[in-house]
Image (cartoon, rainbow, N blue to C red; front, side, top):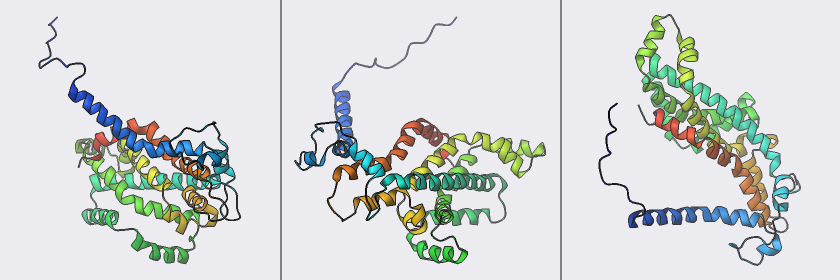
Length: 295
């Protein structure tokens, strides 16, 4: 059995001045960016009497979750006191439908533009990319008039459709670049075996697309969950998402302003994207490394 070769180069030292400086810089940077989150968390756990003392960095005297309960189910927006929880399931419905439709259509677009190249494929791809760089504010008025004409204004279908339309350019670009890194011989072998467009997509391409499906889903989920403008304009009163409810609670001008409830409501609205990033961060990095930057 051959002897194991010795590694070349200097042996790593334990703790050097440069490494200590790097760790100190990273620690200061982390503290700087986490400081607002710390202030929000401790403020949400304080009573209003403690908040009025003005010691924003002090820990709460008692562990009190009453502000979180109020933010979820009792905070008022005008004459209605249903809390931010009233918009949670609306956000879930909007996000799940929009992400599912945009990822499926984006995967089909990327597959068609990568392997089948129909007539005008470059023009279609160019128009899709142009849509990704145009400011969406210029489309709002035509979309409002168009949705009203076809009867989906102020509805769940309307807000889902607008999210799908504005998410498709980015999702198509992700899948198209990912599929461009797949050997074309694999596609040609399936064609020789008699497989057609849908059979190759469903049985060959789609099972290989898991990393990019995860990446596209995370991008879309984060953007749609945090959206405020489209939800306010296109969802209608019965489908207002969580972000609109948060704005109504924080900006209410009636009575005393409860900062602990406002902080708790803000953290509740941001909880879902944070959980998704923490849980799926490893797959997100793998998906990006697998092909999102290729092509």
